[in-house]
Length: 140
Image (cartoon, rainbow, N blue to C red; front, side):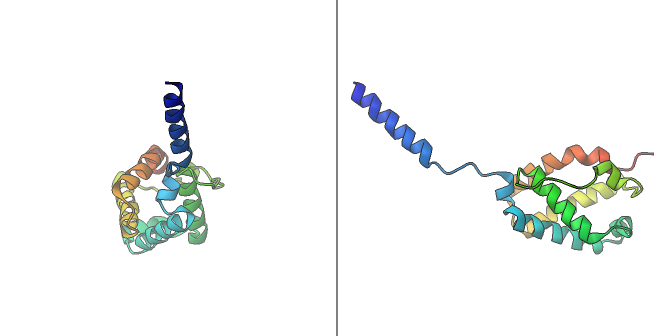
């Protein structure tokens, strides 16, 4: 009987050591290169939408690209540390309303669709971005 249990424990131990590691949101997004592609597509969509682009006319787009990619990498449990300003500081004076925020959220989803990111992965990222909503929308 002892040999039987020992054999089972050995098999379980070997199986646990050879099981593929759990995928992180960061890896599911394609790591930093995938995040960079998503952010690049998102910025292009901002530039092509006049109702949104007006909010970014004073924005340094290179810095925006860098800090947004860094922030998404951080939120997705990647190896990045977010070194930008707070969301509230960044968005003060931009006067983004709820409808515009919702359009921006759709643009992020569209960028992920274009990169063939599965919907469950998109939902995971959105769930991590939602808490920032109140810091982005203009408060009167």
